[in-house]
Image (cartoon, rainbow, N blue to C red; front, top):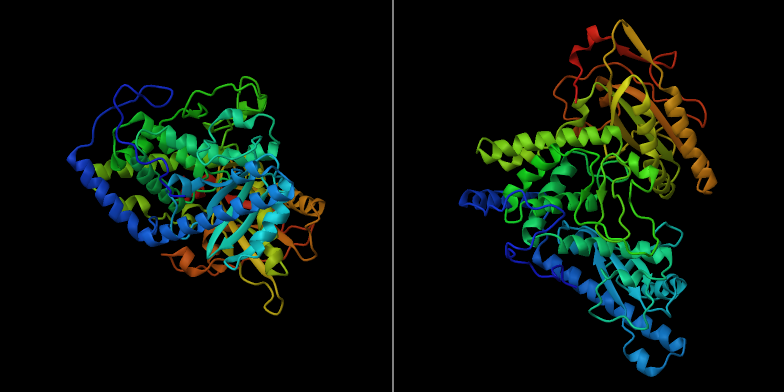
Length: 545
């Protein structure tokens, strides 16, 4: 299954335009743009965003093996269900890919998102039993696990060293033809909702590829933007920033608006368009079509809850969804600020006043704010830590949301990177992970030394996490979550040195790392559990976003 199943389109004749508006500019690239694009490629290479040809061939080989396994399995099931021989011979079945691999922008060692498509006589229960068992017998398969209860049920495995997630969809067809186009809406009729969800990833990815004027230019631009977003700590759907599909749609929209531009121009235009975008106007790649299948689609005219989305980026395949419903006031503020910075830097690059490397410099998150909240999750075993961390991480947005509502807080920026935390008790086996949230306080008048009590915000967050863990029967004794307020100069006591890259000398103030039991919460170093924030007169050193 080669990545470029669609082939790279050449620049289209001018009459076809992409997107819901006409283009902003049809200008063709100049020689300087070509030179800058070449320089961009050279700058990206050391970051491992391009895969070697050999590695790519290995992926194609692995997907081919997987595809053959699927066909073999479906034939076996068809025989066991006594289908006529004529059907069995042409029954088909196929592995489709989606996500970054299908878009052709996966990085070295990235996992592959795949979808197994089966005909109507093959059930989801067959996928999680007989296909799972068939995979178990393959010598190349390691770390096989099924997550049947997930919102989108999945089999995860490592095939010959490459991580693969496989979803399942059963179509209402007697056979699965080789040239099946999953973008066909009529395929969704009478399907189980889990199959519709499983098909969605492929349908969205395929639509995106059909909605950009030039796939090669789109790919190179997207690789640059994804790297930039990761380096600037704003690549994470679960934490309220944007995930891969959302970044792809923003880049695709830029390509539609500048259909003849190449990557160096498109990266610059990306920052231009989205630093000036009037959110919450939605980003759409095509006019949403109604399909009369009565599935819920994103439509603020119909659904009151859609009116509260802050940064809507709408998937192009039916049923249209907003891929960024996790975005909050803070995360949007952080991203828009980053778009503006990106515009300033690419302005310099186009004027030869800076190199591309400046765009990919990682800013120091731990120098950026004056106040931080450190969240700690700990569990007695590594396996439990993985589960616990997954749950805690999926709830951090709730904490950010309640911090944002606090009248004294302007912004809460959670760093998507988590870190191993220092052990509290060297003799005890304990696995700890921590996240760091940067805070900006409102400048207030008339108070000499304002105390902000965040106990309630943090307490309600920890309560929610514990409650959910207990309800889902995941909770084990000694799974703990703790949070504390830390000032910038105290971070070095918690974080490894290479992370901080401190320029200043360390302070000697102590931080109490009290382990929190389920209910008590020692939030800050102040005995009254309230957080002291210097008054505006003393707040000169605050690094504003």
